[in-house]
Image 1: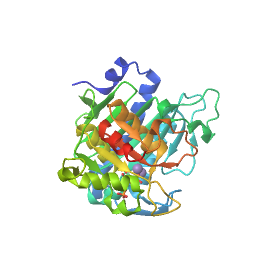
Image 2: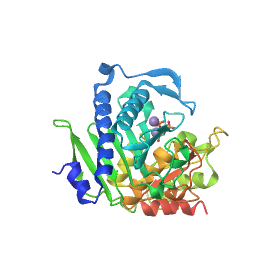
Image 3: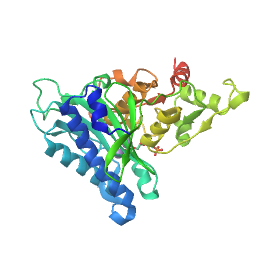
Image 4: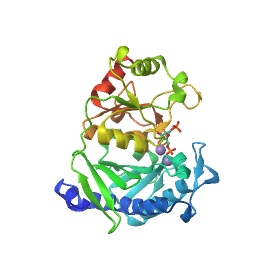
Length: 322
Ligand code: AHG
Ligand code: MN
Ligand code: MN
C-alpha cells in the first residue's frame, strides 16, 4: 500500500502544494483524534457563541477551526485563509502561493450523537501581486481550484483528495499516522437508485425539485419505472462520501423556509471542493441553473443550491428545471 506523498509527487504535485496538503492533514489527524476521544476529550456540546452566519458554534467547530488556522498560518504555506467559523478572511504569509478555504467541521449537528463529521478544504492559487488581506483573492470560480478534499471522521478516517487528476481515497493508518492509498480512482456510477434529501424541507422547495422527488418516490409504477432508496446523513461530507463510493444523487436545493436564506450550503468551502471531487470522479455538480464550478463568487460565505452525484441522474433532475 502506498503513502500519500509519493502518490502525489508522481501526479506532478509541486513540493509546495504537497507541503500545504500535508499541513492541512496534520491538523485533520489531530481533529480525528479529538473526535475519536468523544466525551473523554471534553469537546462535545455547544459554546455560547454564534458564527457570522447566525449558527451556534459547537465546541468541536471552534477547536477544529483553531487547529487548522494555527497550523496553516504558522506553516508559512498560505497567503490567506477563509473558514466557515471566521467572520473574515485571515492574512498569512504575503509571499505564499496558495490560499485555502475550509469548513473545519462539517455536520456539527452529528458531534453529540457519535455520527459522521468531517473537514472540507479547497486550495486555490493567490492571484499574482495580490494583497494577502484582500478578501477578493478568494473570488475565483471553483474550476480554478488546484486541489480539493475532505477528511471524514467515521469508523475509520478517510481522505478524498484531488489535484485535478482524478479523485483518490486514502485511509488513515492510526498505528503510524500516515494516509495510505486505498482506492486509486473513485468512479461514480452514471446511474443510480439512491438519493439524499432532507425531506422535511420538501414543501418549501420550488416546483421543479418537488416534481422530481415525487417521481422518484412513485417508484416502479411511476414515470421513472424503478424503485429508489433514500439516505440522509445530515453531514454533506458523509453523503458525498457515499456518492463517491457507490453513486447516488445528493441535493440541498433552494427553499423558502427563511426568505433571507434561500440556500444552505456554502460555495467556497462546501459546494466547490465537493463539486471538484465529484467531477473528477466522473460525476456532475450543478445548482439547477449552472455548473457549480463556473460560479463567480461574490462573497466568502455565499450560499448555493447543490445537486450532485451520478451523471445521468443529475441530468434527469436538471431536466425538471428547464
Ligand atoms: P455545517 O455543520 O458545517 O454547518 O454543515 C452542515 C450542512 C451539511 O453538511 C449538511 O448536508 C446539511 O448542513 C444538513 O442540513 P440539515 O440539518 O438541514 O439536514
Ligand atoms: Mn458544513
Ligand atoms: Mn462546519
